[in-house]
Amino acid sequence: MAKKEKRKLTTRQYATAIAGVAKTTYKAAPLAVIVQLIGSIITAVLPIVTTYFAALTTTALAEAYAGNPHAGEQAMIYVIVTASLGIIMTAWGSIERYVTQLMRYRVEAGMSDRMYEKFLTLDFWRYDDKETADLYDRASQFARFFPYVFDSLARILTQFIAMIAGLGALILVSWWLGLIVVVAVIPGIWIQFRLSRRSTKHWNENVNVRRSQNMIEWSLLQPKHIAELRLYGVVRYLLDLRMQLRDKDEKARIDFERASIFKKLGADALEAIAEVIALLWIVTQIIAREQPIGQFIYVQQVVSRALGGASGFVSAISGVDEDIANLFDYQEFMALPSRTIKGKKLTGASLPIELRNIRFKYPHAEKEVLHGISITIQPHQHIAIVGENGAGKSTLIKILTGLYDPTGGSVMIGGTNLKDIDITSWHNLLGVLQQEYLSYGFASARDNIYLGDTSKPYSQERLEHALDRAEARTFLNKLPKKLDSFVNPWMEDDEGNNGTDLSGGQWQRLALARNFYRDSPIIILDEPTSAIDALAESRIFKHLFADKKRTVVTISHRLTTVERADVIYMLQDGKLIESGTHKELVAKRGAYYTMFESQLHT
Image (tube, rainbow, N blue to C red):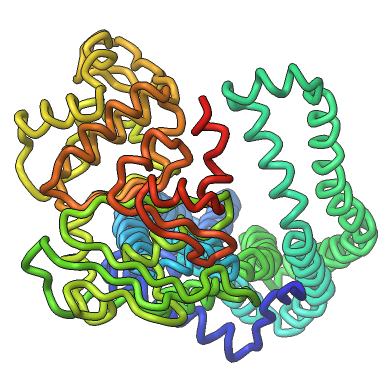
C-alpha cells in the first residue's frame, strides 16, 4: 500500500480550519474565548501605550531638570499612569490565566468525551483496520491538544496585533522608519517560515523512526520484559539501536538548522541595522531639538515590538500548522458511521440460533476466511467448535456475537436476522470469554468479578456461585485482603499495601468467575482455560456442561473439554468438514480423530 501523503492545506482550507477551531472552542467555553480575544489585544497594545507614557515621563523629567516648573508635576502624573498600566497588565494576566485553565479543562473534557464515545460505537471491523487506527491516532492527537491549539491561535493574533501596532506607532513618528522596518523583517519572516515548514516536513517523514524509538524505550522499561531481554542478550543491541534512531531523527533536524544558520544571521543583522538606523535618526532629531528626548525610548521599544511581533507571528503560524491539519482528521473520524443498535428487542433467552451459509472476508482482504458454514444451536444445547489454529473458529464466534457482519449468509436468532435485532438486547443474553480476556488491574478481585454485570446491584450470592464454578475461591482467599485485594502489584490500598500479581491460570479463573457472575443464558468460551491445568479445566467444564438450563458454545483444544459436548463441529481452512458427537467423530477416523489422536491414547 502506498504511503499516504500528508495533507497540504490551501490558504482557504487553512482559514476554514482556524475558523473551525475558534467555533468549536466558543461553543465549549464562550466566555473564555472572549477573554482570550480581549487578552490578545491588551497584551499586544498595552506595552506600546506603556512605552508611550514612559517616553513622556522621560521628556518631562528632562524638562524639569532644565528648570521647567510645571514639568515635574507632569512627570509625576505620567509615572502614576505608567504604574497603573503595569498593575492592569499584572491583574489581567492573573484573570487570563484562570480563564485559560478553565477553558482548557472544559474543552479538553468535552473533546475527550466525544472521542471515547465515538470510538466505542464504531463498527467492530474498524478496530482491525489500519487506516481507521491511523485516523484515530491523528484525531486523538488533535483532540488531546485542542485547547492548546486555540492558545496558539491566540498567540498568533497577539503577535500579529503587536507587529501591526508597532509598525503603526512607528509610522506616526516617521513613515520612512516604518518602511525600513517592514523591509528589514521580510527576509527573516521568509527564512523562519521556510525553516518551520521544513521542520514540519521532517517531523512527518520520520514518524516511523520516532515510533520505533518509543517502542524500544517502552520495552526496555517494562519489568516483565527484562528477563527475556537479558537471557537473549539483546539489551546492548536495543540500546544502540535506540541511539541510532534518535540520532537519525535529531541529527537530520540539526543539519538543516545548521544549513540555515547563516541566512538567519543575515536576516538578524538586517533587522539590527534597521533598528540602529531608527535609533540614530531619533538621536539626531533629539539633538536638533526636533523631537523630545523621551522619543528615544519610545522609538527603541516600538521598533523592538514590531520586529519581535513579526518573528513571533511567523513562529506561531508555523508551530500550529500540524495541529490545524489534524483538525480535518478529527472531523473525518467523527464523521465515521456508528454501528446501529436499533432493531427488534429480544425478550426471551430460549431461542434457536442458526448460522446459515456464513461467508466472511476481512475488510481490505482478498481471500475469504469462512466458506459457507451452517450450524444450528438449539436452546440449552452444548456444542464445541474445534479445529487447528487459523481454521476460523474465533472469527465465527465474532460473527455469532454480532461483532462482525457476515459478508455472505445470515445469523438468525429465533428466526430473526441478527441485523434486524437491537444488538444490545442480544449482548445482554451473552456471557463471552475470549482468549484475550480483560484483566482490570485498577480494581480489586471482587470488582473484577462484579464487572461481569454492572447493570444490576452487586449480589454476594451470585459472587459466591461464580467463585465455585470457576474454582477461584481457594487462591483468592489466600490474598492479603482476600477478595478486596488489588490484583496488580502497581496498585496500593488505603493502608499502603501493594496489590498481588496473579499467575496466568489464576487470571483465567478470575475472568471465568466474572463470566459466571454475569449468569447469562448463553455462554460462549473461546479457549478460556489454556493456562489452567487439565484436571481443573475438566472439573470446571464438568459443572458447566451439567447445567442444562444454559446454551454453551466452547472452543478448546483439550479432548476432556470437547468430548462432553452434545455436538462437535470440526472446522478446517474456514470450512465445516465434520460434525457429530464425540463417539461418532472418533468412529469416522477423519480429521477430528487425527487432531485428537494423541490425547485419545493417553
